[in-house]
Image (cartoon, rainbow, N blue to C red):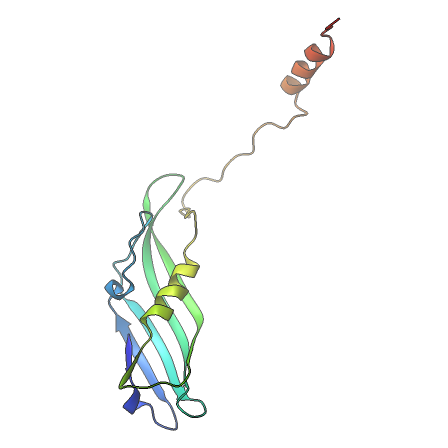
Length: 143
């Protein structure tokens, strides 16, 4: 996503819209990016030639559940997106790397579908079956 710097006035610039997910250029086996990235951003000049962009990003990512292997929709929302560029030159500022980074940071390492059943805890060491094993070992005479 690129901001035309000549459009950012002294009062700032409000941007609202969506970008195709292809700008992220992310290829992960557990995630599929097909939905657009929606944004509501405000850009300001801070000091001399320092650009500050703040706002909100949101998208929906198709994720594969690590328990059931089914695909499900995972909403991703960056509530407090911020990007600061010092000593900005040129005609435009490309925010794509910062947008990509913030979305990647919110992706879970192991996505789990909300419909996946919770994992059950295994038997603890103090169960009857576990006690029988240790009891037999205690009876073992090595000498």
